[in-house]
Length: 212
Image: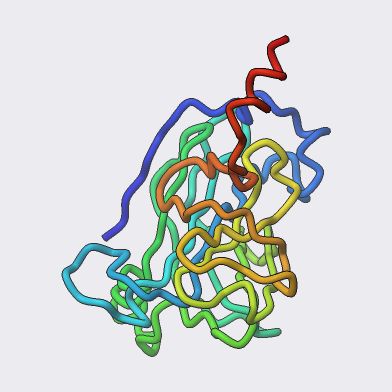
């Protein structure tokens, strides 16, 4: 099941100059967060599935709506193996989430082997392509390591600095070897990555000193 969430997000004000990680000023669509190794029922169908409960989010970082026709997801293979094709329009600041169950349904409907998103737990890559006439180009991509993708850890962009990737490891805390670094925050499927850094406990005395 595919869900589109819209929310107020300051990044819709970011210009093409500042969004340096989007290679084309017209390509406002980017990968936002993804889950490789599910340990719970993320798609809400009542069953845990290593295939169906994987998910990938995309986000519109631009200032105008984008027609998603021609945008496709693939894993890290050198030659893309299509896992899902988007449709419809994505408004500025909006997020669209694709579950492995969505990818499986799309693959079956289009004559592909039904592997879902097929994100490898030992390390792989997520790629977002755009197909326009005879041109197929990578719009955004991220290659990940195994340590950052264990049970229910996600990798995503920091909301306050979208060029920086972090691990949202609230369900399964990372160690010092986790790359990208863990935040102590929880995955947020379908919504803004609102927690960029871990919350540290503070004493009442230290809190009072801040306001002296």
